[in-house]
Image 1 (cartoon, rainbow, N blue to C red):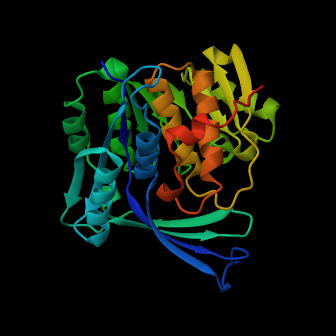
Image 2: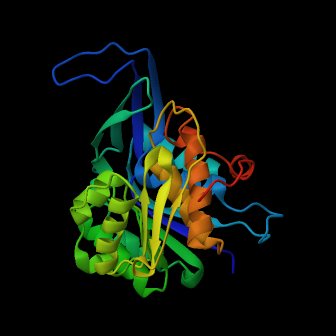
Length: 321
């Protein structure tokens, strides 16, 4: 059967202002560029996965199917999101239009170094229900060949339900624990992999990640909680990968690039990782692929607009150690 990725998460509209620097509390900074783009961690990851899915003629000769499960409002932002998913070739049967809540919105500031500051009004995302997830999962006919990808912009009870339900169906579950917040340790044992950044890893483990040694300590803590595979993203340095309770570890390097906007780089990484795993790549090869995709994304403004296509990623040399 063709490999598949099921992304369960959020859909937002991003309103982005780029300025020389981000404002301090109480300060107004005049910005130069305004962009309004489709975003939301779930939608970003679904779009990244769709653009990076295997093309006809690839090594597997088949296209990875992408399903998105989400909630949008009955407003112009929601309608634009649905149109975007259709254009990207994402299966949107399970993106529900909520009549009682607006679509999610994110306000994003980006400075001259590409660093960002984000505030989110969740809107309809906060109403994604367990029943919506159950309905979507009932349609998946090849769970063993499906990777489920989740984040933490949806209600936590729904996320917990989805992780357990996907695991019970035999799907490999990847959790991107962002935005940073505590996760029930009992749920961690249901995961195939977890992909925190340094901040998220510290919140989950209490270990401040600054280098390979502290990344190894944080990974060991997550292994002890039952997660078999840990991928800690380290920005421009790449990602630290640990498997089998720390028995095998590796720092996978990212290609050197000049960042203009780091918004959604993590989402690009996770979408790419899910696609590569669904295609049967090893965890280390999947992380290498994801690092290259994320490196391309930071050279462009915007969230979904920055997501690269498969041919762009494959054109980059493999950089890892």
